[in-house]
Length: 143
Image (cartoon, rainbow, N blue to C red; front, top):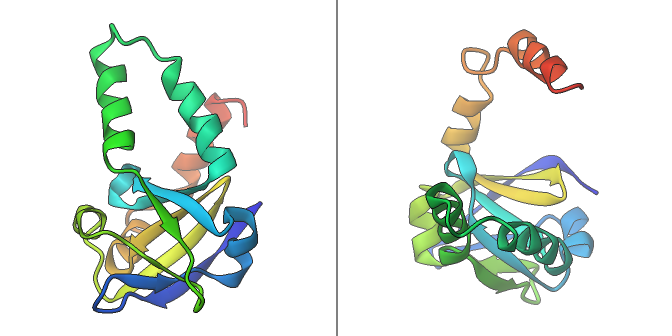
């Protein structure tokens, strides 16, 4: 299970260290793609296959389903961890997530998310994160 929040630096070539605790779960090569909320999602190959099967089962006659499929697959790339424990994030994905030098890499159960530090700090700020409201909405989902 992927858990935790780690601060890392993106170098000038677009490389970032993958936290050691995530490397075993993600594997030597894994998939990075555009994520929701303007971050990047990273999936182990096994988790990507599970996600891919769910997307394949969406009806192609539904425009929203087609758009959702395009969004995830068009941005997807296979990344390989180098000897220093880094991956190279392609320019198009760095631009999509507005990644600057400082990034957060967080574990979200079955995937990793890569966030620009400023965006993550803003997203998790008390002004934007009303935990009471979130808890109320989750109770509507049965949690």
